[in-house]
Image (cartoon, rainbow, N blue to C red):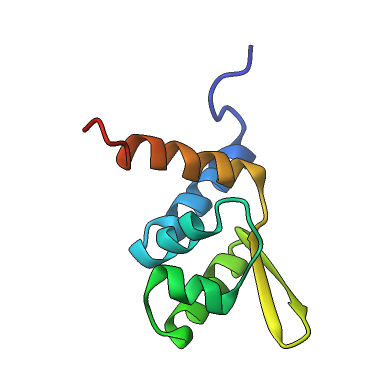
Length: 101
């Protein structure tokens, strides 16, 4: 049986992801995406900040390998790149956003 985060590669990947997500706005962006592919303007509406601010944070998440984006006409569509990040966000939502607190 493999121990939790036994490999250095897994530890480094987890640390990098958690550091990138440790900003409230970036975490909100990830929560807004929830496995969907959304245009930047829809992310802006859901998160509630300026488009330039959201774009800067999307760039950070993309640089860290957490998000990927593509152009579709005049829209930039973003989605979470790694299924493990989706699981992590879902677990954080279950723990911190439950109604039974």
